[in-house]
Image (cartoon, rainbow over all chains, first blue to last red; front, top):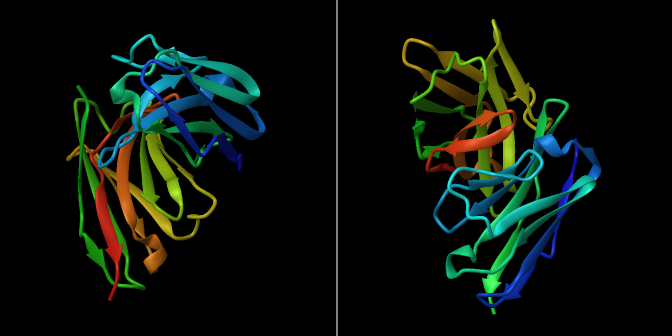
Length: 108
Length: 120
């Protein structure tokens, strides 16, 4: 199965700053089947981006994704207070889904 | 609007079988575009996909490598729900369990999650 490694483990930034989160796959992943989620304490993960960096319904334009092959990036252009959370990447290949271990985005 | 409502015991004894059910509203368990997933989350293992069931003229299942042999999925079309059975549970199966819908492998609707504790 494909292993997803996210970096950094924790990212400390201030509101208004730009956040760049990385997701690296152990082998090539189709960008069609790569997604990003946001999770806040006590809540289920929420779909942010999917399939070649499309935003899910209701997701602000400050969230964007890029990448291909084994390297993918989630960018938050200007952090809002509600963006501080844990972010996960997820892929689906050959009938198996895996998640990264998450990046915690915390207030500096 | 799709809603998923999970039910099941919050406490299971070691070696027993864990059974969870997820009721769907706003979509059909026999949808030919959706798949119905089980995912769990624990501090030690993070988010862990367990598998999914879906209908494409017949019922199909995908299982995570770690769960094969221990996990079974079923669907009840009359109640528009799907279920999970996990056998021979140990304390390592303690986690928050989620059911979720996927369309083309993007998990777009989740239930709120339920803590299942394995303990005697």
